[in-house]
Length: 380
Length: 214
Image (cartoon, each protein chain N blue to C red):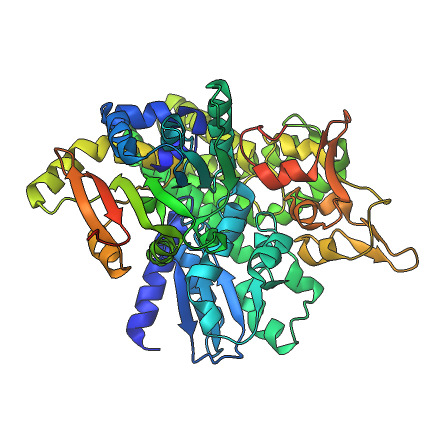
C-alpha cells in the first residue's frame, strides 16, 4: 500500500461519510482479495462503495473470495431491512459470478446484519450453499476466521461507538449546511458563520453525549410513548443548554446591538435543536425513530414452536436472546435492547417468533419476510 | 425504471408517460409473432404488460420477476381480465433460470428487464435463454439502450435530466441503459433477426432466433 492509496482512501471516506445518506453503488460480482485458493473462505457484502473499501482495509492480509451483491448501493443493514439486499440478490451473485468453479466448498459467510433481509434457509435450498453469519463489524473478520467462525458476544453486537457518533454529527451538520447556507449566507451575512459553528457544536455535543441520553431513554423504554416523553424532554433540555453556549458566545463577541439579532439567533437555535431532537433516535443504530410505528411492536416467542436451535442468538445484533439450556427454549433477558430489526423473526425456521403490539395486533413472520421493515406501513 | 418499480401501482402509467405512450405500441408489435398455443416465458414480467398480451394471443405464459408486489398486480390484472388460460407468475430471479428444462419454450420475451441486470446476470441469462428455447424458438427483447449517435445521446440526456433528478430524489437510484447488447447476444450464440429503434434510438426492439432458418 502506497501513499496514493491512503490519499484515495481518505478522500473517499470523507466524501462518502459526508454524503452517507445517499447510496454509492459499486460494481457487483466476484472479486478476489489477496491470493485465495479453492479452500479459501467465500464472503459476501453489499455494493455500497464505502463498505467494500472499508471491508478490504479491515481484512488486509487475508485471502478470500469476495462476492459483491446488488444492494442498490446501500449499506448492508439498511439495504437488508429495506428489502434491497434480499434473497434474490444473494442467489444471483452466487450463481452468476462463477464462484462455484473457483472453490471446492459450499459455505458462504454473510454479514450478520444482512439477516433481516436474506433468508439462510432459502439460500441453502435454492443454491446448495450453507450460510454462516459473520460478525457485524468488518474489523472483527480476522478474529472470526482465526477462531474457526466462532463469534464472541462483542462481535455480534451493534454499538453506537464514539467515532460513529462523530461521523453522524458531521454528516448532519454538512447536510444542514448545504441546504441552509445558500439561504442564510445572503440573509445573515457574517452571522451565518456563527450559526454554522453553532450547528456543528450542538450536533457534535449532542451525539457525543448520546450514552447519557441512552440512560434516560432506557428507563422509559417499556412505556413505549412517542415524542412526548420525559426522556425526550430531558434530552431536548440538554441540547438546548448546548445550543445556548453559542448564544452566550455571541453575546460576548457582539457586546453591543444584541437586542433583536439575539432573539433571531435564539429562535433559529431553538428550531434547529427541536428538529434534531425529533430524529436523534432515528440517527442511531441502537434506537428506533419515534416516528416509526415498528417501535410499538415487541418480538414475542411462541414457546410451543421453539425448538431451541438458537439461530436468533446468532443473528440478534443486540444480544437480546439467551438459551434456557434445561428447557431447550429461547429466552429474551435483554428485551429492552431490541431494535425491532426483525432478523430473528425472518431467520427462525419454525416461525416461533413474531411481532405484536400492546393492542394485540400481530405481524406474522411471512409478512415480515415479504415486506421487511419500512414499506410505509404496508406490512399490516 | 427504478422510480416506478418502487411504487408498483404507478408503474404502468409512469412507463406510458415516459415513453409518450409508445411503449404499448411496442409491446403490441413485439407479441405479434406469438402464435396460438406457443409456450412463452416472460423474464422480468413486472406487472404483466407483456404477459397478458401474449395470453390474448392464445399462448401459455409463465412470467417471472423478483418483485412480489409487481407480481401481485400482474395476477390481479390477469384475474380481472377473465382470461381463458391464466398465465403463471413465479417470484424468481434470472439466476434461477437454470431450473427450466432445455428446449421447453417457443418464445422467451423480456421487456425493460435487462437494463436492470448486472453484466454477469445478462451473460447467465442469455446462456440460459439459448438453452431453454426450442430449436425454432424466438427471443423477443425490448429495452433501453444508448444511441450510437452522440447527438441523439446528448439529446436524450437533455430531455431526461429532469427525470433523472426526480428519480434520484425519490429512490436514490439511477437507471442505466443497456450497452453492447447486440454484441453480447451474438456472443451467447443467438442470432439477431431484426431490430427496430425509436426515433431517439433509446429504445430497441429485437427479434432474436436460436438458429438461422435454412
